Length: 228
Picture 1 (cartoon, rainbow, N blue to C red):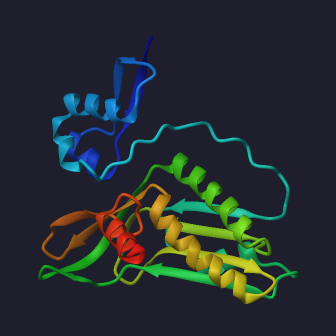
Picture 2 (cartoon, rainbow, N blue to C red):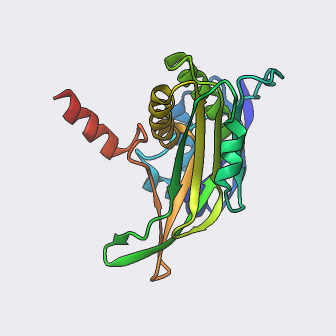
């Protein structure tokens, strides 16, 4: 049997192929991710530059969330300036004595003699929402006292000094909320499909992978060091 497959390209893969999406016809089914990658390489040989740094994902339809008011899980991708107060207000509750907040901003790094002037963010939005839902379920299993979770993340251009992500978690006491926030930002960087490009004062740009990503060489090295 065979099927027609729509392939979506993001970040570096979109730059290498010059495409945002393409149709593959007569793809044999079932097909393994390894065989699909080999097929893509035959179609787009320049993708070999991403060997070992790419993740293939199958988009699935998201189930409608329950309409219950509590707990609230709020995830927003926006090209607008982020309001910390809006995120905090989204998790406020009279039953909680703590709101733990994390704000991630663009820093002015020096990379190879070049100065970072901003970051450009791109996301696979339907999958990002799905991964956020999984992350919320995971956190609630680890910290049952957590009540509301809210994350706002920027897309597009974010200059130095501006917030790229704001998250807040409410809980009856601060300990669980603080631990959950630390876990949340690490897992967000590791699993949610949001890519960032560093733009330098030389007008050169470079896509960067987070050290927390499970396919990252840095992440693997750190794991091996911990095991040893």
